[in-house]
Image (tube, rainbow, N blue to C red; front, side, top):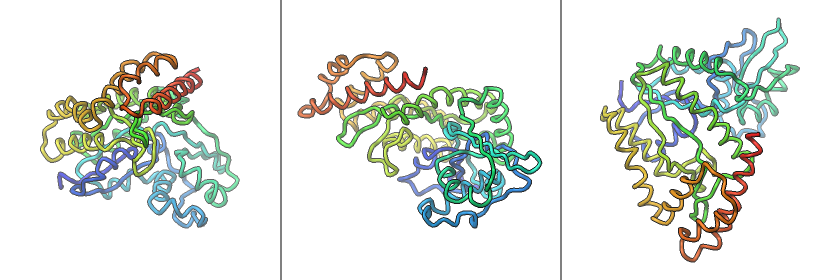
Length: 345
């Protein structure tokens, strides 16, 4: 099988790293599905297909997005993967942050667990609640309500299923984590400071390291791609600003890691790529921006007040833009910690 053939189970990062490279061939791409939903038992009575999406108002979701819902509801993702897969499987567990919908189908007490993703919620409201799930009761289960025992069992079953398809040494785990910072439209480093972004960041910080650690123990032969400390978001990303939409330098780093594993068969190079990333980032975003990021990362574990932020930016902000930079940093940093406090209570 071709060394440049890959399949994906994970968030957009696993696919976006190939944005500027067309040398790889892609097979089944599974996204917007929590691992819990992927391994859940299928319904005996309910199956959906494209005919269950008659509402033309949501045509923007497209066929691919609807296909992700179909696979998630029908529990056919692993079958699709088995029928059409590459030599390598690239995964992360970012989609585990998504809530679950526990649906009472009402027939002999049957229940169905699906991923309550944004596209599922849109399509459920516009289409599915009016046909296939009409009169069904739905209960939302937040991912932070799921206990460690359930996650361990889920990841064990998940591992068993993918190891039936892929050689374990051909499974690549990217330890994706959300960015706390992003380069804004003016070229400054800013913080994700809205309540929704802070909630997502906090949730992932609590959940993802735990899942990655569990999975490494279950599958010790997989190859790990670690995330460098300066992996930050980009407001110019094609899919808009988001804690999982990174700068191109980050995607280039991931692509080089993947090539080292798949083409060059040199996993030892991953460490040098990781160590060189910070310097590459510094060269791209200039010394002032790098120092700013470096400073704020050194302080990210403690809360410092408005004056501290102003003082820290004074030295590093680009000349001629200091006033604007100071205001942006002060407001965003203050708001970031304010929202983080609300979430963690």
